[in-house]
Image 1 (cartoon, rainbow, N blue to C red):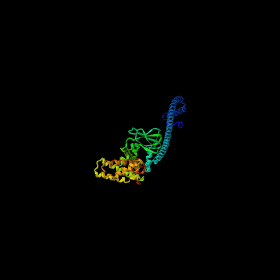
Image 2 (cartoon, rainbow, N blue to C red):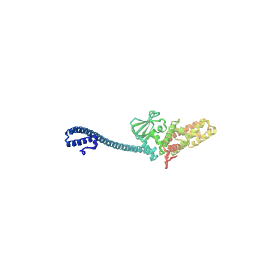
Image 3 (cartoon, rainbow, N blue to C red):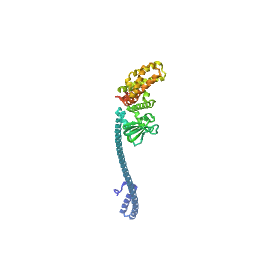
Image 4 (cartoon, rainbow, N blue to C red):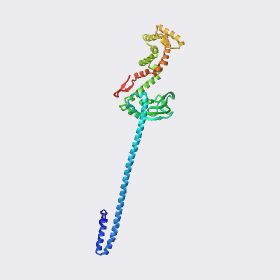
Length: 394
């Protein structure tokens, strides 16, 4: 009997055991009336014990069920966490692959633009990483002329074509690769022209926030300073073109400009025209300023000396040559440099040389290496030296 009772049954189990023992002892004593009373009590004790056992079993079953459920939930959480980590790794891998592909495409475009070629490999990688890919549809505005609420961006186009519009008039077409928007990005000044996509244009965009982050990096020793220099050069050229009389009128007082133009004219065997135009303009300027007689005489001598090279000045058409020869002879023999006739004759003679300078020399000079050399002299280009510092090249 004792072996069949679990000590964990407590008081109820002890009572059932005691009642069993009492019944057995009463049966040996033939006290059957008392045995009947004990059996009734034993029946009630067993009922209490059965209820207790049932309750404990139900409680144990519920606890086990809860434990099993907790284990299942824990395993599910672990599985979900592993699945989430795997999905995150796959997403990170896909993002890394996409970013690497974007960077590779951006690097190819950067390398194809001459402006970015001198940049170091580290700068190109950082610039490519900061660029965001974007596609412009046909007719979409890439850069808006003038004040604009759109954010300032540097747009580096890798494929497609775009039109340049000034006051809604198309002035040029650009084929990729090209870059626009650097002026507004760096200085915040309004764009001088609009750029509109002609067909789909695949591009990479550098936002102002990313540009500011790049300017804080010590490795950016070429791109940022060179962008600033490029803006200065473009502003200088735009102001020169916008001045009254054009580029020559704006820059003829700059000896460096005239020196480069004359060197270009010398390669074309037309340098005398540059000298003569400048000498005539100097004479007219002295007359308009009311210079004294010695100054006018010196200016006249400088022009007359060039007139001695009459064979080189005769670039007019045949119908003008006879009059040109008469004017040349008059300038040679005129001994009164302050007279009105000298100014008129030099002005007539200068027309032919001006035509040569403005129509022949300057257009080819603006497209040749001489003009770039002049700009490099004004604004020394920047490139990193071997130690990563900035070096100016004149």
